[in-house]
Image 1 (cartoon, rainbow, N blue to C red):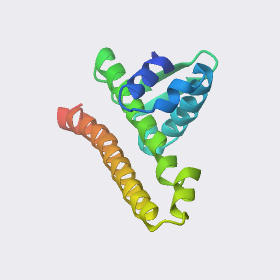
Image 2 (tube, rainbow, N blue to C red):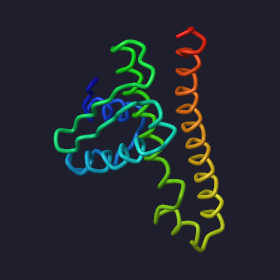
Image 3 (cartoon, rainbow, N blue to C red):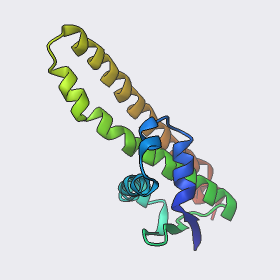
Length: 154
C-alpha cells in the first residue's frame, strides 16, 4: 500500500490556483476546507474506481492507497497527487459557479452594468470549471489508455 500526505495534494492544489483569501485564513481553517474538498473528490465513482483501496486519515492527514492497475510506485504516487489536486481545484470552483452570496447579490443589484459584468464573470468561471473537469477526466482516461492490461496482454 502506497502512502501520500494531504500536504502533498494541497501544495499541488495551491500551485494551480490563485486565491488570496487563503492568505488571510488560519492554516487549520484552510486544511479543513481543503480536506472537505479532498473527501468530495475521493467519493466520486470515476475517481474511486482507480483504486482497489483508498483510505483518508484526517487525524494523521495521510492517504493510503492501492491502485487497481499499478504502473510503478513513483509514477503512481505522482499521478495520484496530481489527479487529486486537480479534483480539489474542481471542488474549489464549484461553489463559485453555483452561487456564492456575492455573485447572487450582484446579480440582483440595481445597475444593469453589474448584472452583465457578473454574468460574464460567472460564464468565465463556468468555462474554467468545465475545462478543469475535462482535464481531470482526460488525465484519468489517458492513464487507462496508456496503461491497459488488455492491450499489454496481461
